[in-house]
Image (cartoon, rainbow, N blue to C red; front, side):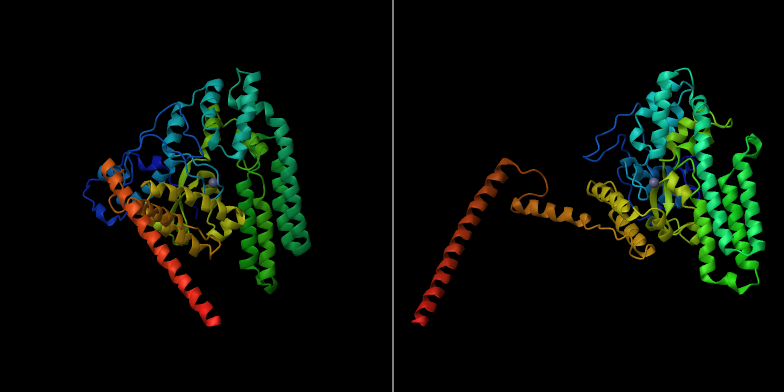
Length: 446
Ligand SMILES: [Zn+2]
């Protein structure tokens, strides 16, 4: 089973339900600042200026209007948080809110120079490979302003393909050598048949027989499955042997994709089926915020607040049906990036934009699922409250969180002087006490 990311578009496809009288009170989470029009950035990241403004609709309003079903409400509500420029909990890169992505899709023109100037505004959102592709396109556009993105990539195709084939064949040889050392002759022949076929697909220049990473991995998975389940030999059922088969699959997963290799990107999108518009969209679409189930749906995860988090589209697609521990293995930086994501959420919670119980619940979910590997520090949620209390007591109970008037300040000053006087007296008394004690001691010594 595969987990497909839920994008906002699918929610808004004009669904109309006859019965609109849902009881929304069952949803504990309140609507938070949903009528926000602009982005509120962190202090460190300056407020970006985009060529257009985005208007966000309130998820609860959409639910009441029948545009989304109540069961979709948690997804929409969490996805709504992405408009505050959250870093991805997996890779740590900035995520693009889906509403913004929709606007960009609509604004892409067929002219390459115009597209470059449009994409330039969103450079912060690009993943590393996409950023490299963007710089390649930008510099080529200066030399050849008449070529569109697809034509530019076609020009770069030959060199990129050479590099890619070198990488791919090295990985295939690796897999073949592992198999030669450990498999019996019959199974090795089967494996080498798969590899040979793939070699031919990689090396051939005929467009109809192109190499597909997905099919190759699928074939390998079926091969491993067949050996383990159908073989009568007890050797194949042992753990070291399963580990060896896993190693073969893991090696296959390192085959470059357009998400982690510039060469693979160029080779893929230089094909005829892709257009200028596809490439322009693809540069940003991997960064789009999507809804991720902490415990995947195929493993029994439910669509509720305590199991949902924002994640970039690329990582969501790449996750397949992995659990959190496998995900950490793939992204060793995940615990740190998760903390970054939560720090931002805590910051927003202090401004009243994100629900507090959501933060604590999802942090707990990840703690449990990762068996303690992701131990998020959410103490920041309460630090803020303490500070507010201290500030209020400074104005000596007169103030209720609002700025004090002149009279109040005068009173506060008077009280302060009184307190200082009391403190001084106390100090004098204490000093006398200690002096007495010393005197008694001295007398006793004599
Ligand atoms: Zn990511």
